[in-house]
Image (cartoon, rainbow, N blue to C red):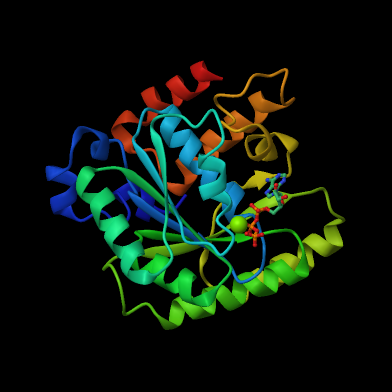
Length: 257
Ligand SMILES: Nc1ncnc2c1ncn2[C@@H]1O[C@H](COP(=O)(O)OP(=O)(O)OP(=O)(O)O)[C@@H](O)[C@H]1O
Ligand SMILES: [Mg+2]
């Protein structure tokens, strides 16, 4: 895990000391997720938001992706009251929405989808940008291209922001292919998270039934317990759950499971 996260990542000193109770739970208050080719940004956004909500952190999902999948999810039954979804159509609305959520001390996940404009705009407002990588060569190449776009834009946006790759929707693939993908991603010095999300039907269940992996019943979607544990570890790795309250927050997450 990076020292960034151990230090509190993109939080400024002022935010660390003056934030609300909820903010003190958060190490990385605003995360953007995007890559140039479909690689699970929407699933990952909802999964991280679900962990934060299960740890009782007020959470805003900002849906800046083209197809409004999370806006649609929010209209299904079962959305936890701690998660709100805001659909934004342009950069001005995106910025207004993220700034308002920051002021409230909410956790924010921005689903930037797959367009360069939204990925750049979201990353500028975030403390950390996540570039998901599916285990396919096309996804890996798209992730590296996304990383280059973000690298070219480091001077804009929030000071101290960073970015990382995260493996999502991994399947068991032959090791030769895995090595090829690693070689593609290794073209970039950008940090790779140690933990990702594997491919599980449980992550898709909220889009079918509404709710989240923490609110759905086991009869509805098998494998929820594993998905919850993996999602909580992933959220910790990303820096969603902060140092002081991490143990208790994770315990609550496990209890909810
Ligand atoms: N970890 C996972 N396990 C199982 N299925 C997954 C996982 N991640 C993504 N998927 C599935 O892969 C498909 C694409 O995922 P998702 O919609 O999250 O990607 P996206 O990058 O937002 O795509 P789009 O470009 O269409 O917005 C969906 O059917 C989703 O349910
Ligand atoms: Mg999407």
